[in-house]
Image (cartoon, rainbow, N blue to C red):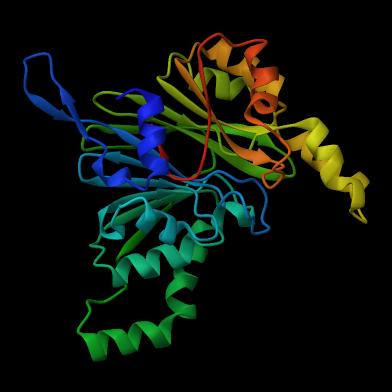
Length: 311
């Protein structure tokens, strides 16, 4: 389906009618890998224009969630994706806009009928965080088991801590590979690549320009990359009491739009999707402003991501 029609249907709230199959070479129908941008804003503060960072990759009936910003469960409901479909969760790094609702997603998924085992992947202390989900919600979990007959929460989620790049998962025809990226002062921070039977999708996570990401994204069908608009950052920090430190952090740990274009070109990706917009709540920044620097270096398809957009 052409991208313009997808955006039109999404604008009408008709995401559920988007087809999830496509013709196979033999004339049959095969399940298509779908990518839904659940939240496209960057930074921890709640925003009017964009939800917190998260995306879900759908392969058949299985859902793979990448990052768990504030409100991720509701965004999945709005996208028409049942939480019970989650098979794995991937956290790129431990900034609060990427992990704030990690525990809530798992707890609400359990209430929604999520079946064990759900695998979770991310940097330390992911295992401790997973254990604390049950501890902090012990009262609610016990009541729902006794009062509603729900199964135990224990054993639902299996955390896998990763500290280096490489293959992290290969099941059900889906291979997931991680690469260390540069997002100071957070270390480690990861990008993830999903190779499915019909597509390859890379999620950059938060990163300054990183050669490791270029290598990970080589020849990918889709690269979802964070983006920084420097004039907007200057406006954003203008009234901040700690503006100098904030600006220095943003510039050192994120990727300006022109550099995003260079990365996409060097990786040879087919489609570049801009997301994790910094700043993410400034209506004066137009799509053309976001893409101008990118298009100076990248000749492929460029998509300005929006919440609940499907690709």
